[in-house]
Length: 362
Image 1 (spheres, rainbow, N blue to C red):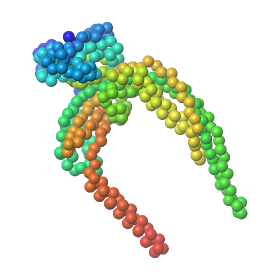
Image 2 (image 1 turned 30 degrees about the horizontal axis):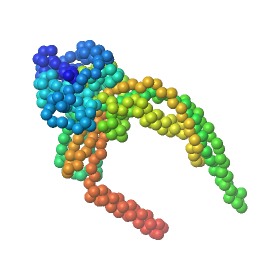
Image 3 (image 1 turned 180 degrees about the vertical axis):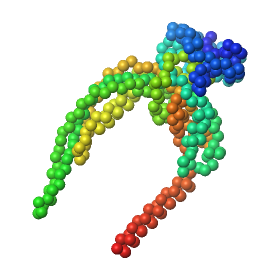
Image 4 (image 1 turned 90 degrees about the vertical axis):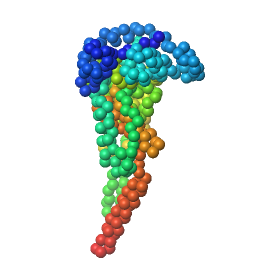
C-alpha cells in the first residue's frame, strides 16, 4: 500500500500544519507549537526509501479506468479517516477530501525525488487575499463592478518544484559601430562616416538560475513571480509541506538545462552589448557563448494561486509566497477604454489646434 505521512499533535492528536507566521508547526485545535528541528528524523528514511506499490483503481473500485487514465493517477488511503485519496502522479502533498487533514505522499519525495532545499511560506492566505484586493487598485480600465462581483473560487498554497542551475560562461562578441561627423567650409556641407569593427570578450558566472520543473504551470506566470531570495532556503523537511499542496517535478534536469542556458545566454548577450558605447550606431555581428554547467539543485518554492470567476470567465492570479509579489491579468472595460481613447484624442487635438492658433496670431 502506498504510504502517506500525517503529522499529529502530541497533545491532542489533531492534525498539525506549518504556520508561516511563526515558522513552526502548529496545532489549530490546541495551539501547541513544535519546532521544525524536532521533526527532522522523520525525513532521514526518505533518502533510501524504495518505491511503494500503489493501489490500482481496479483493486479499489468496480469501475475500470482507461489505460492512459490509470497511468496518470494513484490511490492512497488517509490514515485519519480511511478515505481514499486519488492523486495525479506529480502530487507530493495534498489534503484528504473527507476529513481535510493534510497529508504528504511519502514515495513522491523519496530517493531522487527528494528536494534538497525548500523556501518555507513566509506569507499566509490572508496576505494573498489582501494582495489581490491591492492588485485591483488604480486600474482605470478595470470594470467598476469587478471588485464586487468577481468570485474567488479557490486560494491554495502550492510548493512548486524548480531546478536551480549554476554556470560559468565565456563570451565573445563582434559588433559593427559607426561614427558620423558633419562640417561645412562655407561652400559645401560634408558628412564623414567612419566604420569600426568592435570585439568584446567576457567571463561571467551565474548562480541558481531557476527553471520551473512542473509542466502543469505556465512558465511565464512562474517567471513573472521571480526573484526568490535563496537566503530563506532551508534543508528540505516534509513537515514544511503540511497544510499546503506540493508537486514533484515532471520535467527532469536534462530537459530544463536548455531553457536555463537560454536565459543565461540572453543575459550574457545584453551585458556584453552594454560594454559597446560611444558610437552613433551599433549592430551586433556575431556572438559566441560557451557554458560550463554545474550539477543543478532541486528545490521547492512557495506560491499562492488564486482562481476567480467573473461573467463566466476564469482569471488566474499568483503571489510569491516569500516576497509577496503579485501577478495576474485583469479584464478590461471596453467602454472605459474607448472613452479614455477618445478623451485623449480630443485633448491632443485641442492642444494642437491651440498651438496652431497661437502661431498664426504671432
